Length: 515
Image 1 (tube, rainbow, N blue to C red):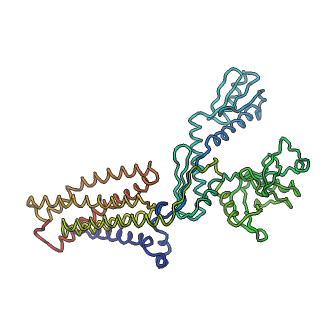
Image 2: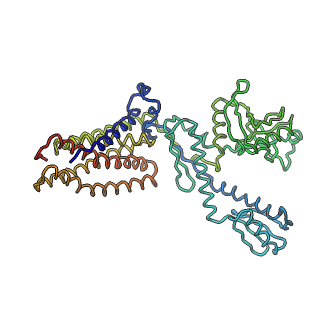
Image 3: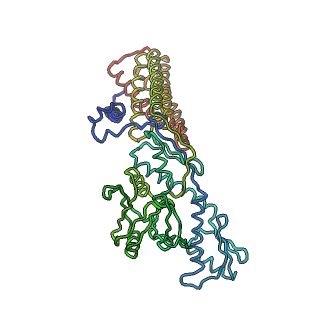
């Protein structure tokens, strides 16, 4: 029944730290500037159902993406057949069919040599032979890895793009094999989000085919595309500079008109310098997602690895383009299959109703504990309030998002936290009825209830973590607050509640208590 100074220091430190963390959340906006700068941003993030915002469900054309990856087989096959330091292997009729690359060897005896060369280039490729016919394909395991890499890559690109909006509360989650859910609280319209995440942003630089433009005859090496003015333009199919050599892109201004300045890596800088130095006076086209967004004329060689994209850009359009290029190209085409907007007014109503329900639940619990256990009920009420403060502090510290189901989780935590206190008090009551002294009853009551409290809370925590890992949307929001509540209640019920009772006994020295 001693009062540990170290325990008192730990409890006081945790309490003060928790209050500091929740101040930015509950202080009105006009007073937040009074807080230290590093503390102002430590607020509990509100979810889409509370703050309002945009919800978009995207579907990835994963089959087309895998087909693109399968086309890499053609490059491997051609390299192996032609041989770099070895004789060419004669072949004919090379075609792609159902994810396989099929061709015929003129001499079936060359198959062993061909297989050896392919293994050196890519050991993961599966090679099948049927007479003179040879098929190259990726095994099912490798295709599944490609599928997961493509989806994960798309999620990362989407996250980088939406981060440019300055919103740290975004929710991006994969659903099933080919769908991605995007939630952006605080956005009034999903249109801007759709433009950011819907464009693949695959960019490349091509020479304009001046000959084809003049003659009106499109050659086999030419490509007809839509230009920036809504007309058409003929470009060379060959990529002069690949878009993936871009390292950065920023909004700039060219004679007062918004433009996008780009920087290339070493390989891109060399390719861009070659393009501009060998074609002074000619036009080149900047192609983004199959459309020419700009076709400037090369006035001089550009050798510094820095270029500028000009066109009929608005400031917002230039910013969106620079964001897409800076975040990288999407590895797969995305289609919007569902979208909706949650109004800020609806979110405010949800907060009001959820807060009202939680306060009513809290008030009923506080009053009930006082009526049943008297002074010890007040101790329980004090610990319970500390528990709620710790829940919000933990959410603010780790940047967790509070949702409407999360408010329900807090209400449930109130009941669960009190349950542990009731168990302790009932154990103490049993010891007092058995004739134990006050300190002996308190000590035995805590010790006997300890195992039951740990077992029940750890079981609940395990369920909450499983929901957090595999759940989505409302389930995840509920699991977040439930997890924080269980951890905080373990600390408050076992450490704080016992400290308060020991402190009470030390100053009261009562030989009997009415419990």
